[in-house]
Image 1 (tube, rainbow, N blue to C red):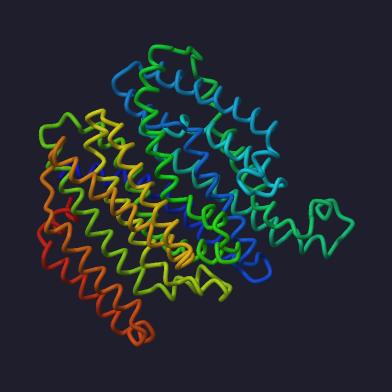
Image 2: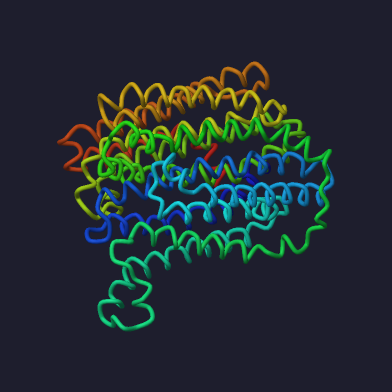
Length: 485
């Protein structure tokens, strides 16, 4: 239990750095979806650009973050930090120059308005420059400072959004001759969102400048080749992940779904926030834990037990999201025009849950240096995503994308489990891992899709309470030991 305790301590600390910024984004969603700030079409445009940013973030990182953790504990730490930083700096500068020179072509290719493409380029480059500084904080065991920078950056972004979208129009109307009024351009709401992102990303770079000042700036070519050999398959897996997670919105656009419908889908997708928060915090804690504990005698047993905790907690979150979905939609989606897409919530939340399980299962290929296998699995998921989206979008519009999300992550989860059982056996309690999610799904879907149950909340609340009681009865000893620890 001591190793498990250490994992959950890490997850809790990094969870603060993840949950709090996402909670700030919780406030951004009702801001963007409020009547009078953005309509569904404008929000659709914002979501398309943000999803392209997810895709290009993977390209500009090219797996170097995971390679950093892989070699930090086995090679000279200073050389790993210096070499990985130099690599990312030069690649980012090259991208910046090439993208700015070809921004008109890039805008047409990505179907993004040219007026927003420059902001997008700068956000991508600035985000790439903080990859290794943030990784260094995690590797050196400085989660408090990591959390402060992460939370501070997102809080600054939130304040900038409020300033540009709420305060600035009021100031410009009240005092048209003031200096601040000159910063206001009517109809530029989408642009202000990305101006805020550029400024907040720049702030993060400035705060993390000490990392750059402390480097030896020595580039170890042999080390870099080893890191790239490890990183590139991770990048391929990351591209596949980006296709699974983010490509549906651009694909919806290419398949002639209106920006208004894309905005509705993207807004309702946000209700998977709570599952995403849990799985993201878990991933930040588990990745260093995987590598640091790989040599222990009972590593496999520890990983199996951690999986049980994850699945049980994830099942509780899944059921809670579905039971209280209408409360969450009222909090997040202020304009009722967005509520038309609520039927996607059970699917996208389940997809996020499957992704979290896959993250846990991925331990086998990361520890055995078979990152190519991870790339193959992710590519299989990407293929499923594209097949389902292309087949179902013409029939079901954005609901086809939601179904494709579940199919893709479900495929990756099952394939990874089968391969892991062959190459790195872990004694998972499969019956338990299937039972808890299945019960949560049945209760949740009854509560969500049966109209009388959903309108009264009586069934949902009773189902949620009964599920918690079931967990306590079946896992009483384990839970009491964990709480005691």
